[in-house]
Length: 421
Image (tube, helix red, strand yellow):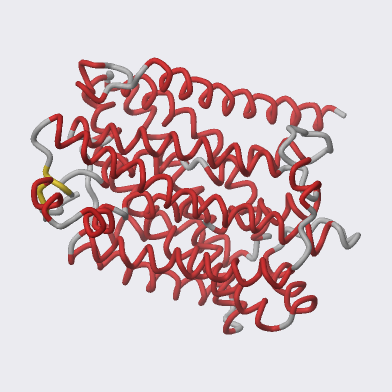
């Protein structure tokens, strides 16, 4: 990542338990912003407004999966000093790596589409900017956030944490204003149910928007050159901090996703309204039902989400390209290439909400290509050393990977059946 190590484990221990915990919080928060990107806004509001609390179980399951996946990704980076794409390049043949790289680039474009378009929509809602100029302003702002990497990993992490805090504050306010959330309906939503014509597609979209393949690659890289760990004992110490980082950072992201769905169910579904997935319409309805403060909170949260997740997505793209293929582009050139499809979409005036939901389905199909190598490599003692997965962890990861693949096959079969009929 081109960042010089700033601490050793010994120095970390000497700072005291509370301060050392604060210093270690960060990588999972960077990963977490990808789990609340504008694609999540679209899929969660569509799910809540169209199906009430029926898909709560999908949001909860996706977040639990995310915690395990990101923990293992970070552990792989801590154990080996390499990120996941670098390990794939070392352990697998060139053809495999080319295939993994190509699909990862397609996923990166789908990711950037959701994040970039979401931030542009937010600028349009806040300031009335036309979509194309809003997209250009989004590019400038994301470049500014990326420039913080030149000041070291902590400056970038703190900026991302601050933006995550804005999203959390916005939805905390909306949760309070939206009002009633019947406990019985929330509990019933924990029972798996995919009835309804569009429920399978939304379920896969929610998972695609939550378990993000590009941050699986990135999280393993975020620990490179961050804290120097020379022994197994040092790595075990960092691993304990990493568990807390993942629980807190991804726990916040999970609560925000649940808040989105619950707000939509409370305001739009239970009120007898139809499905509301268009983000401009969500903004308008919130203003009508709850007042201008609610509409402002939503727009600010959307902007913070789009800018932070877009910056993280660009950083992930660098890790993927250099890891699989030993290729490096200047970060600004990389950003310009990946944002081109989003700018084209804005220029053509294509339905942004449908594009957001479709992008999340594309992301979901890319997840197995990140999870299978992570599963196979993290269980190997010759790769991971003393931090190799225990059998129970390997089984849990295998179940997660299988569930995601099965849901993808279910979506494909359901889509083909829809075309035939």
